[in-house]
Image (cartoon, rainbow, N blue to C red):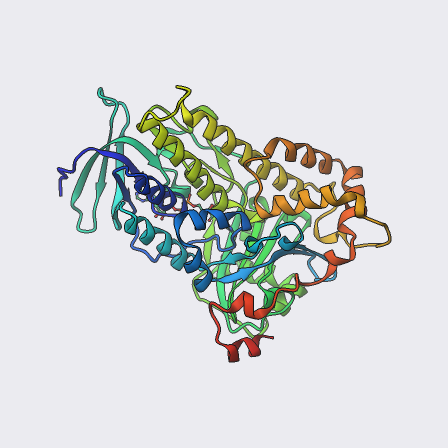
Length: 469
Ligand SMILES: Cc1cc2nc3c(=O)[nH]c(=O)nc-3n(C[C@H](O)[C@H](O)[C@H](O)COP(=O)(O)OP(=O)(O)OC[C@H]3O[C@@H](n4cnc5c(N)ncnc54)[C@H](O)[C@@H]3O)c2cc1C
């Protein structure tokens, strides 16, 4: 169909969390929005553990009650060493005293569909199975032309005042224009799938995210998150150099070397072996490479376009930060686009400048936290247990900073947190932080004390909750 659609205010490429957040918020403000998504939803996607700071965005999108009735709740994250002997539990209720401390573990098929349907309900035109193929940003009248192909190979041509690229790790504009730059030292690949029939334990029975250190030359880790009463997502993240070495060893003996590598790495951890005992993996192993990239700051937005979510930057997912970074970044950019298109920014400055100031600051914080995690000279969050015996009351600020960062406080106070992260980068100061903060007894409990009823009530009836406990 060659389109005779009227001029759109905003065309959005991609209907993941970044694209659908923008589509909803811009439509709510009365702008004419069209979103083009190449897949038919629900579609599978990696990235299933959310941070508490997402909560306010769900409220703004009008989705909070649906979130509560749809997904497992997450009270905190537990970092554990490979054999499960040492671990630290970071419970969000230590610093967040309203109900938002209880975050969510989501099946992305369902979650992304909820968000996308919501943008349709709020007035956005949404076309699924419609792949954007080309974009012209330099038209003489300043508008953008977008060409896409729909489900029956029909062509669609749209004109818009503004283009929002939310195409995820495909990074539509950046890939076509050669803007993508790898982040040095963070080249990793993830292998993952879902497991069914697990008996939840080790903190999973109370909704916790588990991050297990593999350490050594693998520079990797394993995630285990509960998506239902006996349903887990389990992924292994490894440095590409190690994967290449293993490929040559394993492909000589196994038809599917990736599957063999996935199983091998899970079984190197006696702790993970226990967590998945008796459970069955889904046959399809998913692989996500192409890790950690960004675009030059000056190219992340222009006069008539902006990049949001993974289409703008992607950083290693160890802290489960991607969805919050994408949704909140998209929220800030939507606000700025609205001001720009309605000339409602009093100062006359481009409102996108301020929005990207916050967004770049947030990604920078997460980037530095991740480098800290992989720093072989600092003590890992998992191996931090030890002597308890100090009066720690003077250190509440440092403890709160750690928790707030893991909860997602990246945007508004990024400059203050940079000082904190720099402090932790020094091995001796990290030792001090460990001794005075992380060595506290409560950090070594397996759970955050959430009840299975509050964590699993969306997915379980009473009898099943009994079975989980
Ligand atoms: C291994 C791994 C683990 C992760 N774990 C977590 C986690 O636990 N928690 C967390 O918060 N984040 C996690 N993330 C990150 C998270 O998945 C992403 O940050 C998040 O999905 C980004 O949302 P988005 O909307 O920017 O992109 P996406 O969710 O990828 O959505 C982009 C959409 O654009 C569509 N699209 C692409 N190209 C086109 C085109 N040409 N035309 C039309 N449509 C197009 C795609 O089909 C897709 O639906 C993880 C990532 C990885 C790789």
